[in-house]
Amino acid sequence: MDQTEFISKFDSLILNSPTRDYYGQTEFFNVGYWHPETQNQQEACFNLMEKLLAFIPEKQGTGTILDVGCGLGATTSYLLKYYSPADVVGINISAKQIEKSIVNAPGCKFICMDAVQMEFEDDLFDNIICVEAAFYFDTREKFLLEAMRVLKPGGNLILSDVIFDTTEYFGGFVIPENIVKDIEEYKNLYNRAGFQQIEVVEATDECWKTHYRDLKSWIEEEFQGGKIDEPTYQANVGAIDVLLNLSSSSIGYLLVSAKKPVN
Ligand SMILES: C[S@@+](CC[C@H](N)C(=O)[O-])C[C@H]1O[C@@H](n2cnc3c(N)ncnc32)[C@H](O)[C@@H]1O
Image (cartoon, rainbow, N blue to C red; front, side, top):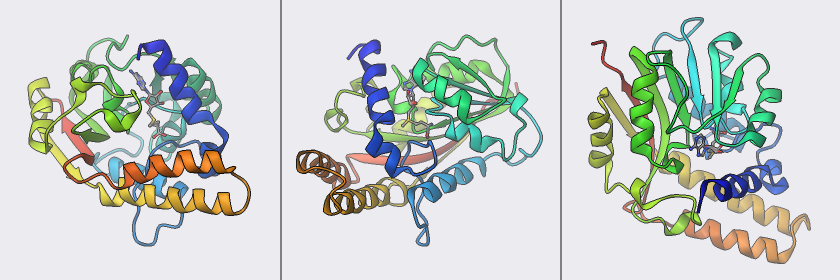
């Protein structure tokens, strides 16, 4: 699909009311990280942010951070736990989502911008975070080159990302160029872009699988409680089952950290 269609379809997905009901009070849109004791999706989204931010050793009160693919600004707003608003910038391809982000993360700067063509000068940010967005970019590889360019030497890129062996489960949202066979091939993308100290943690069960299990029981409860009609229930539960039952060779949810070399 072209970029205009992508934005319009993605906006419908992220802003529709069952999606927002499922995410509760928060404006996140990711699978989260589920510990055995995690109670709900909101908590899982907080956990995911902590898991990713743990890759940055010294963050309290120091440095700037760019949130790429910032959704409705919930990930950006979470950054305010460690960073001051003046040091936080969020970008998104969707102007509608940027409008929401401005409300959800007051004081941060938001710009409607494509992750693969960033209008920032070289060596600008101390850190870049990108939560569950890079696999949508056209292409992930171009984004890595841009991230390398706009990071300061010694800067950190941290992200959660999805690898897949076919585009067929994603309703046209992803492109064949972003298919990677395995984690080794995935790491090579970072190597080729010039990153060092590349760490990749596979977390498909803790993130992807547990989220889709939780989403499935939530949809079942909503249907039983009469809040969702039968056609909506049938359409969603089928799609969730497909995503839930993908084999480990078909899907991988990754937590990633990489550094721009100092020189
Ligand atoms: C799954 S959502 C994640 C949102 C947010 N990071 C979160 O975790 O709540 C993916 C986000 O990437 C954004 N996005 C997709 N393609 C993009 C691109 N080329 N440039 C910038 N943002 C993009 C989407 O609009 C969406 O906000």
